[in-house]
Amino acid sequence: MMDAPIRALVCIGVRDPFFAATAEERQLVFTTTRDAFADLGGRFGVQVIGTFDDDTLQVGPSDGAPWTAYILLDAPSYEAVRGIADIIRSTPIGDRQLWHYYKIDARLGRGLFFGNE
Image 1 (cartoon, one colour):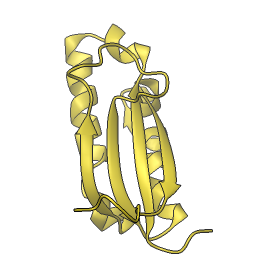
Image 2: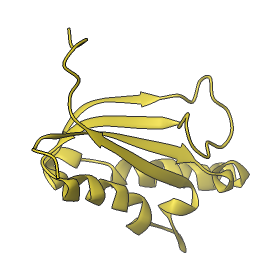
Image 3: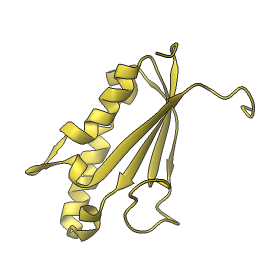
Image 4: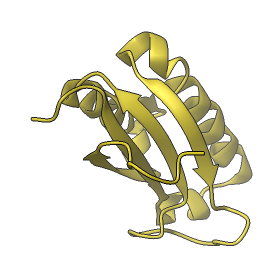
């Protein structure tokens, strides 16, 4: 695999059920998501470089690129990135998991050698 740190772009798409949800259910999704993604550094040893939310110009579900939200980070290992992706799979919300509302994908690479200033 790649030498550490691994640069990862975690891509999150919002699925149809989120938009079909009631306002109360969407608020629960927001709260659960914030809590589920809290302290990524402490839990997975990653360094979050930045985040990006495309919800002001993109409306409706995102089935793939362009995604709705992104987290750019440096990770110590593939397993750390896999653990972050697993948040969507394993976090309960009522009688479902977060994957009912979101999909997630991660791109792995390394820092680009130009454009860093």
